[in-house]
Amino acid sequence: MGVFIVNGTHLPIPPSIIGLLLLFLCLRQKWIKVGMIREGAGFLIGFMTLFFIPSMIGVVEYPELLSSKGFFLIVTVFASTILTIYMTGIFSKKIEEKEKGEGEEKSGSHHLYR
Image 1 (tube, rainbow, N blue to C red):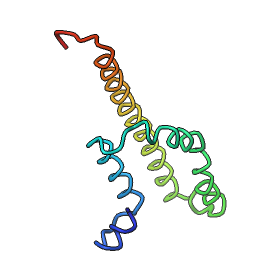
Image 2 (spheres, rainbow, N blue to C red):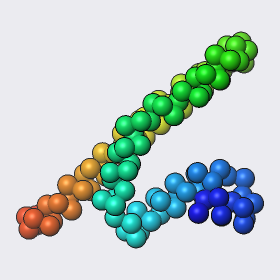
Image 3 (cartoon, one colour):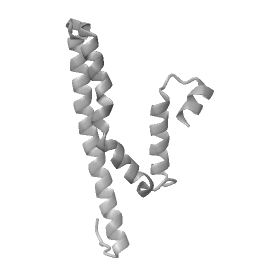
């Protein structure tokens, strides 16, 4: 869908980002249930480190990345990685709290004050 949208609208956004936004929208609107993608997402997260190997090979093949401009590139990548990990933690915590709340409602333990 992301490729179709980018090709049709000529947006300067990678199709994978469009796909992630569509998935987020579908999950948010509850058109897709989390259980439907949980197993596949867990599988991909388990192999996530393999996705970083090509970028590491690029650094080895292009030593000029380690020059003064490369230093700023490395700092930027490091900072964005830390920010990504932090934001993922925040979103994961919110999703876990939401799933816990839904589990309590289904089990019949309703609280008068929340």
